[in-house]
Length: 298
Image (cartoon, rainbow, N blue to C red):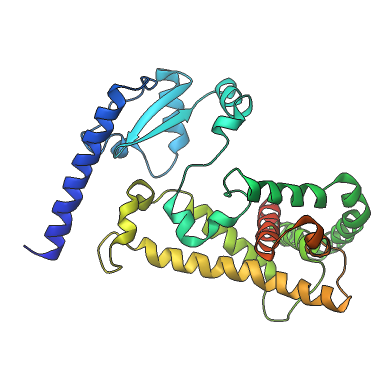
């Protein structure tokens, strides 16, 4: 029997066993909400289109109600179709449902250390405290409003000079404004930090869009030459960009803080308060990368 055939047989046996286990376990639990019927083993996988999934979800919502149950290769999913259901579950019962599910691709790339992906707990509270302090209205008015005003004047001049490139100008202005707020004004002459931040956020958006390894975590243990493990190379590339976006601007600010020439910024404030707030560099740098990436994409 060839290696490929052996892997195929093992995969099929595993899927059958997982399907049987989940079906047995679900018999003694509370019934799931209604949802579309699925195939054996694959469940609703074939009904999930690669694009415009929200239209499919909306159609199911009209047919099955505010909560729609799906089974993707034995993994249960719940689609929330109304605002009321979302508020009832995600706000009124946030202590139960506010955490994100575990995604293998997020862990493989190191994205799980970012503010948006840190599980509820002490580390998540440190991230939130750090961002809340840095974005307090008094801090924004004192430190960041002058920076925003300067960026707006710069944008206005660009729009007057080359109005046909208004989309590029707006994107660039948004990215540079958030960069200045997060790290202060600087440049190393070689790296475009706005483009780096955008590439990082683009990669993260792709990572959370869904991979087979998220449904079948055991795929991570297969060698990289096996068909279906291309995600490993994607994970390496994404992590490399993430670490560059995390540490390169952070270390530049850190060196300026050490010499006393760092302008006001989120990172400078966090470093100055790091001793009293018991914050480590990993938390500060990842929170900064999250702020910069999310802000530049808004």
